[in-house]
Image 1 (cartoon, rainbow, N blue to C red):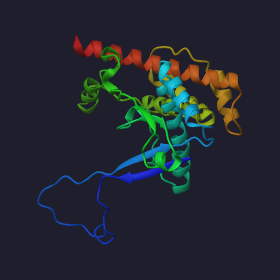
Image 2 (cartoon, rainbow, N blue to C red):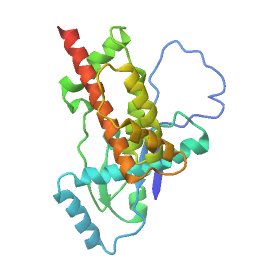
Image 3 (cartoon, helix red, strand yellow):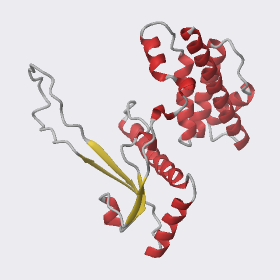
Image 4 (spheres, rainbow, N blue to C red):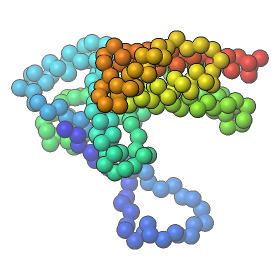
Length: 244
């Protein structure tokens, strides 16, 4: 079950948004935030069982984060359906890393729906800049792209989309996206890419009718990882050339 709440900003009136208003300065408007609660359907048998579940997650490294990732995947399934239902191409997927706050816990149904718990743990917020600076250096590259000193390749966006589909558990979309991404990578990059082009093409063909076979899904995942490695190598080489 997914419970959505919007809070933190005054609602706009119906008439207010119909005509432009003259402004002398750009004052800061309140920004709404959304709270999403992902509630498991089968309830715990008792408070002791719920407590043991949470203790088990807390006691094993990475399990709280894995639980949050599973919740994000469920939310993305909902958002995917909403994109299609609303015909809204700008609706995007989310990740636990980009949330303001992530909590894993348990409580009564009404309690959890309102963002309250009998017991919960709040995960530390991960910083996007925590990855190796020499690997990404996003601020430097952003400046280079916007300043026209470095080209942004078409395949970079396509590979990111393929990665999103993979991580969201969408094997058909991932196969189709990986195929066009691989063709773009092979066209735009000088270095070779260790990817099974034939297997990716076969996976994409199967994806037109149904989910690709498991072995083809593995080939797609390997191909996306190989494309990411090739693009990472290009970025590192570009950074070295810029610094030298």
